[in-house]
Image 1: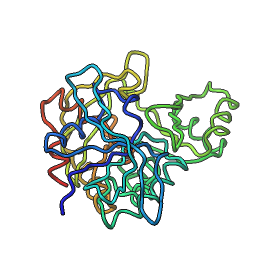
Image 2: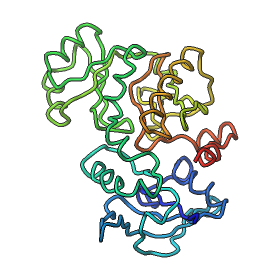
Image 3: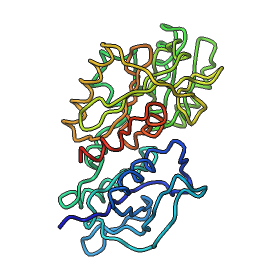
Length: 307
């Protein structure tokens, strides 16, 4: 029997921005196919009598209304009765995130989960990029301050990113004038970090590539606001339509094939100045609503058609 229920595991809808949120965009599209949306937060997952149960609510999204969602009915729901489950909460990749993947592992024989919980548990969004190191800007992973200082000395200026942070948070630009104690403070707080050679052309924007079912489906550029190096739209960057170069397209296909073979259906990858940036977004990829607003191409249709 075909179940016309889609379950979404995400942050509470009241915390979402309908102008740009991909989860709402995906849900709105599948609603038009007469599917019902059951929504719950990660903390509300349980295993009871060997069943994966979520405490949540059925919900309807409507872009035309100021309050863009309406909670229809609160209840506990056996996730095995849904057609698909979307994992859509924001990172960070922390213990709660890992716990939800173990819980959802128990339902994948009955219900397809996007992205596969086993796969995303095995893929650290930054460490995974080491599969493609030859296409990246010079990058190291370490918590050894001596190695970091040597790296900064080599390149004069570098970018430090905590391995398990997200959304442009906690990113630091460091140079030869940066005090050692400042870098040590970052390491004390975050542990292992990703350290990269700084690419000054980030001021012209990055390129976010959308990968669905192993296919390159579109791309946008996100231009940092004046005085910033952060290309995240949540940090004020402005999006625009772009085309990939032949080199970027070739690299994207290589990454897309690897992601599909590793069980990832939907992902986003980023380029800066023709170099793979090293953030392979698999936990909750974003940008489909923005891409639609710019191009009028609805990748939510592509997403659901592939499933």
